[in-house]
Length: 93
Image (cartoon, rainbow, N blue to C red; front, side, top):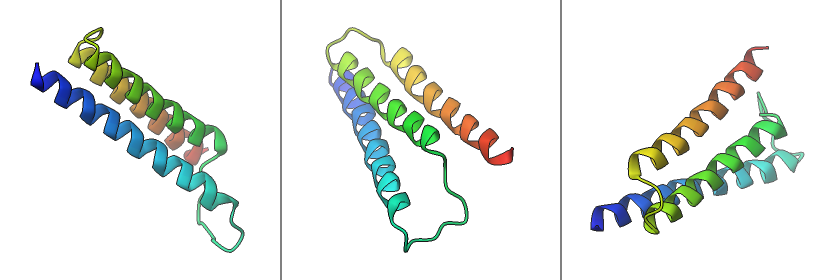
C-alpha cells in the first residue's frame, strides 16, 4: 500500500517537473535577448506539456487505486518517449 503511494507521488512529481521545465522554455523562447542554436517548435512543447499532464493524472489514478503501477508508468513513459521521438524527427527534417 505504501509503495503504491510512493510510486504515485513520484509519477506526479516527474510530471510536475516536466511541466515546469516546459513552461520555462515557453517563457525563455519569447525573450529576444536569449539566443538559441535550435528552438523546439511550439507543437513539441505542447506535447511535452500533455505528457506531463498525463503523468500527473496517472499518478492521481494510482493513488485512487484505479490504475496499476505498471500501466501508469507504461502510459506516462510511453507518451513521453513518443514526444521525444517526434521532436527528434522534427529536428532531423
